Amino acid sequence: MINRHHLRVKLLQWIFASRQQGQEDYSFVTQQFQNSATLSLRSLVMAFVLLERLFQYANLRNEERSGKLLERNRQTGPGHGLANHPLSELLEKDSLYRKALQLCAVEHLEVSSDMLRALFDAINDRKCLGAKIAFEDLRGIAGIKTVFEKCISSGDWYSPWQSEHNLYWDSDRYLIDRQVVQILLKMEEGEGFPDAHGILRLWQSDDRFVSTMFKELLQDSTAYQPLIEAHTGQWDPERLARVDFLIVQMACVELSLFTEIPVKVTINEYIELAKVYSTPQSASFVNGLLDKIKADMLHKGLISKSGRGLVES
Image (spheres, rainbow, N blue to C red):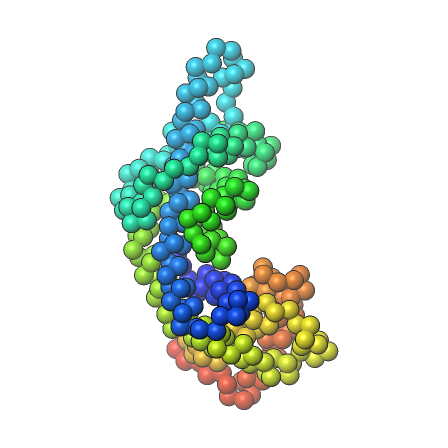
């Protein structure tokens, strides 16, 4: 569920924010980072609570529709496909999901009727799903994945709602949204809701990766700077975007201090981060820069891989 790709994303955001705030106490930041795991889990479970509440609201709207006297008022829209949804029954019967609700203390979490009404109407009127979405398309779990991606996570009210319960939502959002989709895909394949305690253990299982990144890059914000500047070519180091510089620094830490991670994996991961979190030109710039830095580090004996790290390195 949670892997090093997710950790790299969060670490990039946390290190960047810590530097902006002048926070150099890497031990404190590391502890705060680990403490955020419980809030991250809560946000994940809250997304499914919201889906449950949406199903319940759809049931009410469906009952209202069936009681209308005029035929035009009984017409079925895509939103009515959420009523009596199979996923609702699966969640109701899933013991691990019910335990997750208790662990995160969200069994009785309220979602405002205004929020549910706005979401249901947007789905029913195809404002977020597109004109081709029909009632039947939302009856399966794949349809719920579409609803989450196009109507919920991209909605204006979703982030403020999550932020009320998670101080770290801005840095967690990418991670949580990805995991909600992954869980839905797994449930579509017949699997149940994941073990919440297991998610927490996985989140905290990479202590060395997390603590090393914070230690290396918070106690010395100029780490690897001479190496990086030696290969920027015509690019003025002073004009190097701070997020690009941090991405390359993180890659240097990983290349030199984590023998079990293949070189190719490291470079590809940080190119992807540059695509998402920096400028349109950053990915190609970071790609070229890391290729030069990798060659230099190999020549100087600064990269040593073993075990799994030898794969395609």
